[in-house]
Length: 287
Image (cartoon, rainbow, N blue to C red; front, side, top):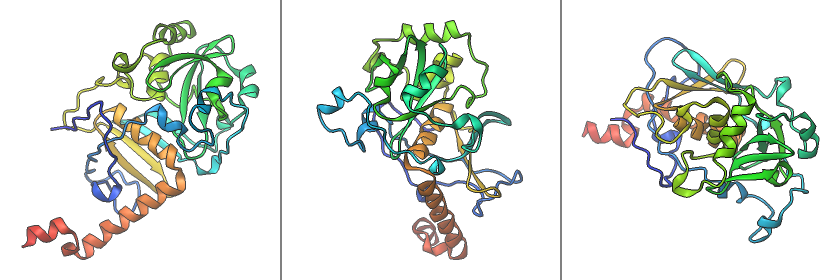
């Protein structure tokens, strides 16, 4: 049976607790890939402010004048595949990944654009630019229409239309999709995070919605984490929504932590291979 992930908040499992692929961390196309069974935490928009310097009620009145730190070098380069088709690709080395202050980004925005707000230690926040300096976004379990500068909350930002490789809807339809959802909240929502909502507005694909795909055991989605120019690691998922949740966790913790997590996991896999009885489960079976 596939993972049955409910809307409730669940804890994330570490790499040491789940089977992944290729203990050497090399991306090889030969041999079977072992699926990954994950329980995900909902990256609810309240969590985006947890590492902020703005506390309590001040969060509601923060206008985004403070520019929060963001180190582009700590981003995780990755690609997403549905079976053999690449449907998402991010490399911070590409020219389209420059980040700007909200004020400097505004002249570059066109209606229907996807905007990503980024800062160190927080989940990226996505929004749909709808014109007149405004965005529509999922924030704190509600779809809101805000000024882009207010939605930024001090974060830097960039246009991310090209990350997903799906064919975009017309700009008018993207804006319509977004505006029709303004005011929806809590149980009315069909998305677990701001990225899935914004991507659904632009591409109209049900795969971004909660329950948009049935988890039936097979895992057609692969997240390829690029650890270096010569090393990568693959994780497999039953649905796009689950994959996006894990990708966003990587964005939050940063490249250094992700590489360390993978290194620890791969080292533990090697140790179990050398000494199977060091693994509690293997040792129990042996007894």
